[in-house]
Amino acid sequence: MDTATHMLRTGRRGALFEFNMGLRDLSMSLQRIGLAWSLAWHDIVSRYRGSILGPFWITLSMGLMVAGMGVLYARLFGISLHDFIPFVATGIVFFGVISGIINEGCDTFVHAAGMLSQTALPMFTFVWRVVFRNLINLAHNFVIILGVLIYFGYWRTMNLPVAVIGLLFLVINSAWIGMLAAIASARFRDVPQIVISVMQFAIFMTPVFWQPARLGRAHAFLVYNPFYHMLDAVRAPLLGDQPDAHTYGFLALMALVGWALTFTVFTRTRRRIVHYL
Image (cartoon, rainbow, N blue to C red; front, side):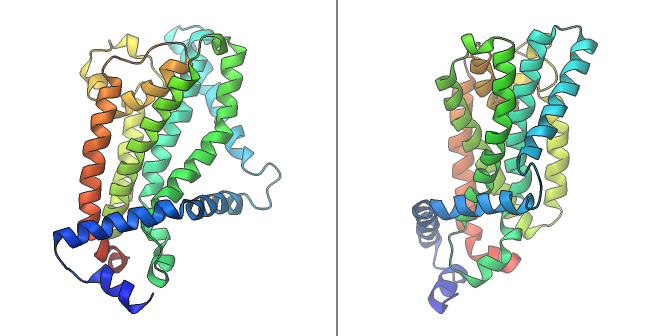
């Protein structure tokens, strides 16, 4: 790292200067978005190097989970496979994207410590790296969703453009949570364990394996559960349904407040993150 960049990262010049440097980091990361994609692709390829199926092991393991959980819970709840398996398949796959971005986000800066200490790459680049890595995983797992929707006939009623909008809301909100976790994890190494525990708890408190109609859509577990709204925005259109009326408003407000908070924290800690590592 050259001396000037090192001084910019470690010297303190006031709140306005830190804010401008944070914007500069964000802008430079967007200009080099291809680098984040390349790093994410390399992560996937290196993880499955030498494997026969390669990344499609992700699809196979997810498919087995969907089939096993779908059949079991459909029998336990007395719900037809036609209604339940598509619900569970979309729930598991898209909640996997949420938990993947957030859980892996904890190690965003920790795993990039070597590159951050030796280069002047924008820190946001490594946030986009985590997001892209999980979107690549989603691309593999989406084969399962398409297969289920086609087999059970939901392809006739699904609204794919609206589902894509919901996916954007899901990714935008997951990204700021993951980045906030990354900053906290760089300073406090117990944070990843806390985050993993919270996400394990959240999957059972969110309608992934159980249908919201059984609880009532006005229940507090759903109204104030951000993971429910993130799932509902994507899953409902794919299943030919409409998301809750306030889902998009909730997610838009969550994104605005969340990114404002995260960017504020980032601007105040940006110069110290490298030292935390």
